[in-house]
Length: 151
Image (cartoon, rainbow, N blue to C red; front, side, top):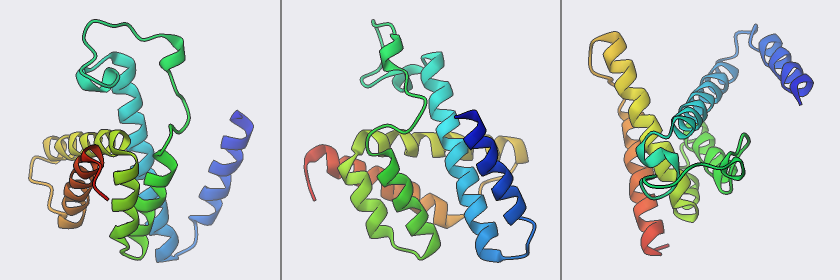
């Protein structure tokens, strides 16, 4: 598995040396997704409140069966929806994915908010990208609708 990841990383680095704006945008989106996944995984491993499992994580320990190093159910659909929303502006795909997997969508929305707060603290000024803020609101609304069973 490590060899495959290394090969993919080398391929991405080789492709990123060109001046294609589309490739640059895709690599940026891939980096955002990887950072969010790392943030969610790290918070879950540390047992940080709600991220330590569904519910608020109080009163139970994590077992080895609860640890998922890959993509969980619905996460692949959500990532594809995010890339479609970023690439060609199809928010409907992201909304449908978030409705279908509200728990995953809610976790990614929380991770995105935490990442934005970290950026704001690091840079010392407010994060000013309305598109990402709109996507976070969309994820939260879709997750809420998914919890309620709305289409």
